[in-house]
Length: 113
Length: 115
Image (cartoon, rainbow over all chains, first blue to last red; front, side, top):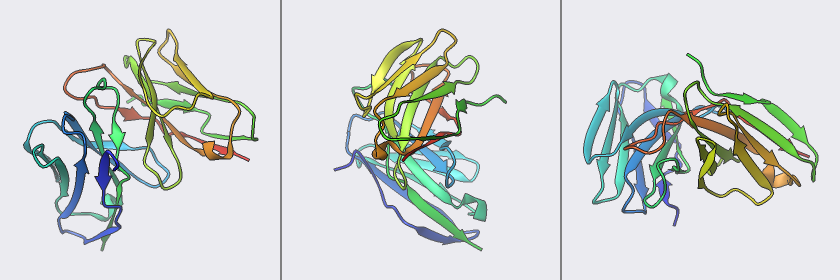
């Protein structure tokens, strides 16, 4: 079992709709959770981080964390074609320094006009 | 704003050759991370440095070594290159080690091709 699991997609969402991306992790002691966006051939870019249960909103993005279910999600409201990218969920596992993060395989998101 | 600088951006090597990748972190960032991303794969954590000391180690092969210098730049040295080493190598930096979260800023990557 991978430490961080994501549906590889592609997830196709119409422009203006809400895109919902999901991630589960195996290390119950994980403390910090991140969502990165990566365009093809480019470097990952941090979108959101969260470390408390509940929701965290930043503009069109909302991260949701449920530590009991070991589940973290990212909602993108009013999806735009420029949101089309691979979204990587990442986790800072317990027992490691804060410098180590483990990435999931990513979900490819496609926003159709 | 200044970003993470990586050089070279592209590198082509033959099998069994050596390669050196360089990373210059964002000014005042003291922590550097290296990742390897194969085609269609997620970034794999290799190694990290804080204040010139190794702080964490991931799936870095024994053929690879890395260090961080007094000016905080880092170099990843790769020897006895194999075809499977062909990948994008990202460097990231962050302003501190520890704390509740650790926002890592990624460089543009070095694309290594081993023939």
